[in-house]
Image 1 (cartoon, helix red, strand yellow):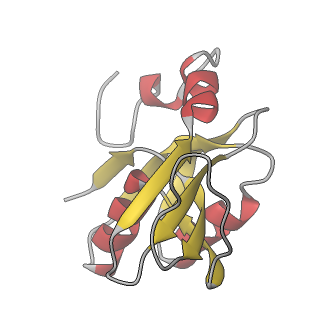
Image 2 (cartoon, rainbow, N blue to C red):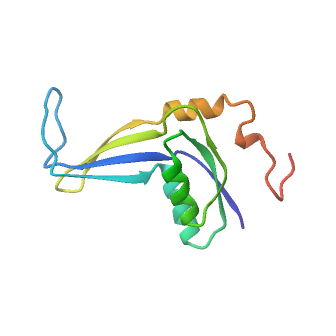
Length: 131
């Protein structure tokens, strides 16, 4: 079975905090990490690691080369991952001491740009399918 994952790809900015920031508050984080992420990205990597042949359909901006490389390094076919002329989506993630998180997401611009492309990837025929 071959699987096509159509979904989000984000650059995750993860901050370790004692507790999530409250309205009007500024506080220091206890740590910072930058990761590849997005629901679609995570699903594609998990499927590939489970031995399922995966193609990823989505969009990254000019700053998304690292995401493409990571997918390919995990064995995911990125032939349907388009590069569009807007920044890649990103998430600001606060993770507290108990492991609870709060996420601010900015992915809509990449998704909108992909949907408006003249030849969007999801309208192309995939090998083994008919158009």
